[in-house]
Image (cartoon, rainbow, N blue to C red; front, top):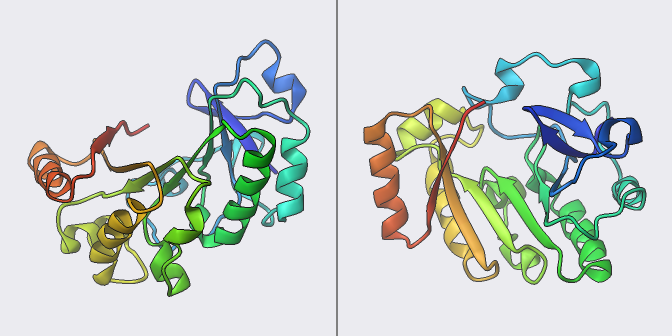
Length: 216
């Protein structure tokens, strides 16, 4: 079960496996805590790539908070620049695990930077506003914008929440600005230039920067 990992040559490397990380300088550590996700995006690697068992982020069971912290205790993260909650599932499905793990990390390494990569549907998942819980813990949140309209968004993401997902995601992003220093919206470069331009216009309107992610 891969809980903490880094990437090399588009492969996931389990950093608590000492044989995998010899001579590697780890700049970013990713935290994989769930398979659950309310979306089934057409471009998601879960749907489009077959992975070897030893290189898969698919969890046989969700790690407990104690197991996550135990994994961190096995590695020296003092020189790591960023911890990122990002795995096969949506990390905010487990908001309590994100918060408690972040509290543990900030207590030991107060200057460590923590990021969440999310689909931005956390408030719909929990049927409440969870953004205040992230205050003082999360330095950056990267939210998948994916499209410029609710119809195209639903077609790409197949969100179980339906058409309301798009507006809820944008509202979530704007609420995050109250508690998180760096809020970013992203799109994957599989969409065309016209759609990217429309996404830029949305980001300019709500004063949140847009990052274009490369699809692997």
